[in-house]
Length: 171
Image 1 (cartoon, rainbow, N blue to C red):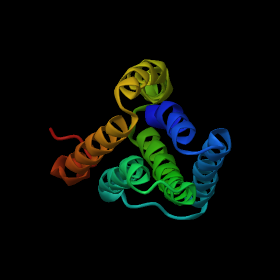
Image 2: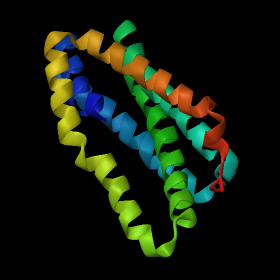
Image 3: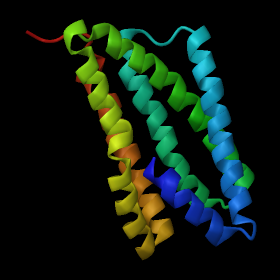
C-alpha cells in the first residue's frame, strides 16, 4: 500500500506529462479490479481453508511484481492492466481471508482480532508512507524494484511454508 499511495503518484509525475491523469487512471483501474474482486468473492466459492493462505500470498506475489514491472515497461495502459488484475485478486482473497479469520476466531476475542487486523491494514500506513517517502527521495525506481523483490520473496516464503496450510492449532 505505501508504494501505491506514495510511489505511484511520484512515478506518474516523473514519467508522464499528464501525471495526475495517469495516477488517477492507474488507481481507478486498481479500484475497478478491487470492486469486481469484492463482488466476485460474494458470488464465487473461495479456496478451501487449507489453500486460502498460500493462494492469497501467491496473489500478493503478483501484486508485488507489478511495482517492478511498471518500472521496466513504462506505459500507463500496462500499469492499468497490472493494477486491475492485482486489485481483483487482492480483494477477492482478502474478503475470503477476513471471512475465514472471523469464522475461526473465538467470539469473545473477535473484536480484538479484527481491531489488530485493522491496525495492521490502516493504522501503520502513515509510518510506512513516511518510510517510502524517504526511500523514494533516494531513488524511485530502486525503491519500487526493492519493494517488489521484498514482497515477492516474503510472500513466496509464506506461500511455500507448510504451516500456511494448517487450519487448526497444533496441540
